[in-house]
Image (cartoon, rainbow, N blue to C red; front, side, top):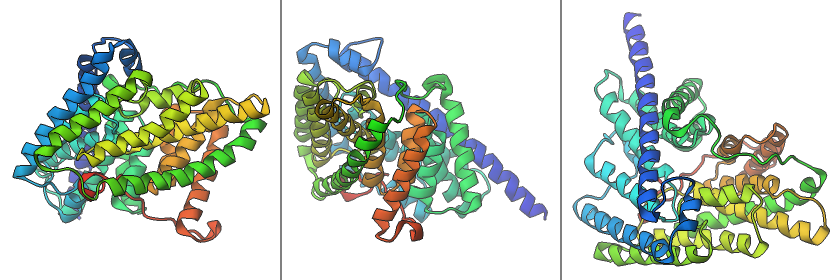
Length: 426
């Protein structure tokens, strides 16, 4: 009995340590990323979109080029010395993840995204959280099985902390890392994510990432949204296949330097006309929820975002795919709403269709509809009426992906965002 209580006490301590460290890692990631963005595009207040819009043409191009070259040089040096296995594989094998090469790899991800690369920052946040937690958890007398659960929970909590999405962070752990709905693991992942989000509040803030514009579900939205959602599901699956394909034979060796510089140049040139494109996609989501803009602009952004993401991965970069996928879906949904309003004359707020399409796109790109809809809802906190529509997307998504009638569907194991060199996002 005493041994059971001692193990329980150590495990509770591990949960607290993992949650707090994940929150600190997420907050630090946000601070460093913002500092790099400020230096790259020469702005000191406002959003990234504000900074890029005010930057000179040469700075819009030079920033991503220099960042790509520096990250390419770093990965060339790093990969000559050690090939890292994905974080998820290391956790499953019970191997320590707190290594200097892994921390360096995550730092290069932040450098690349901060200078404008079309990749997500969540990959680095998850890895930094796992590395920080591993440093402490290995010093607590816990069995390897407990450490594995806590490390996975820390990784998901890192995602939750950087975007202030505690439930989505827990679901990422449950669906995409542990593949388990056992009560103990669900509770551990949830408590760890909540602790991480609260720990990151002094830096990230306690408000949703995006301001909801006040749009609600209307009859016009109910007519247009199903077509946008269905198309987004298909496009999300195509997005996943594209990212898998471009990573089968990524650039390696010293060619990483010119390849990533070239990917940066393509991003910078695109930013001359579309300043929303650089970065993880946050600017695109904010603009889509705010109305989108001219139809041709929104459509071009929806097309170019996955192209730029695929270009960086093909060039050998490492980074998250969650926010690029969400941004692509959001822009596509906004374009559908704008086009439908033009054709029908109905009053259709693009924000409503954009959010639903983004959730559907992300759910199919990650093969995790429940995580996707919760992530989308927590990012913007739309009215409660959207919960039913998002729940329907999750149910239909599982039914389609399992290939069985929806009411008999047993769900699927979610898949990690794909990372470079053919691995899933660590």
